[in-house]
Image (cartoon, rainbow, N blue to C red):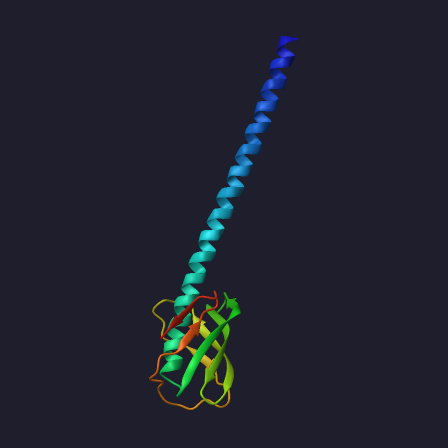
Length: 137
């Protein structure tokens, strides 16, 4: 009788320990995923900042640049495609740009919208990044 009770106690203890290990493992993996997503988002925001500088130095009379919340990462080519809304003194234009994933890469492609004049914008511009943070450039 005493042995049967001991087996039950050990079995229940083992089940509780396995559940605790499983819960802790899941929590650890979720936290690790959150850290990875935050790091990836900060890298995308930094690429957007570089793209905004290039847009400011390419087009005239830019007032505001807004990066879309939705972006697509192409793992095969290593580029992140994102839509950008550019507001100038005269009109509003949307264009798509491809941002490189490599930190030292200087390659940037864009699909130019209509109505943007070439030149350098001297005035500060308002930027809204894809993570909804705002800044000036």
